[in-house]
Amino acid sequence: QVQLVESGGGLVQAGGSLTLSCVVSGRAVSNYVMGWFRQAPGQEREFVAAISRDGENIVYVDSVKGRFTISRINAKNTVYLQMNSLEPEDTAVYYCAADPVAWLIPRRRIQDYDYWGQGTQVTVSS
Image (cartoon, rainbow, N blue to C red; front, side, top):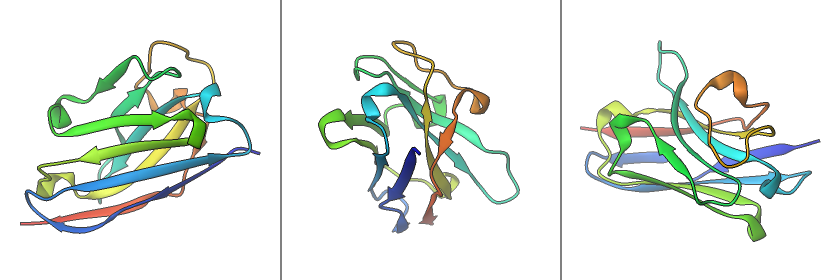
């Protein structure tokens, strides 16, 4: 049974930074393309970033490019999302997810990801 556990969320002022972590257990994280998604109140869940199994290929949604960085340390079974220059619009529950099919090209669709964490709340005050 694959489990994903996020941590690192919290309350931060606009312009601040947070780093989210996602620890994978049950199977090595190197078996998955990993993604981060977020869901704001009253909004649909949306793609944020994803990273290939080897960490060489990364994709971001346009709204976070230049501010967020996704990374992974397979030896630690952990994926990270470094978030800088946070804006109130970044307020959401952030989820990490695992795609067991893709290899080198990260995918963006929610339905491509089979395993999900419980989410961690990020709140950015203005």
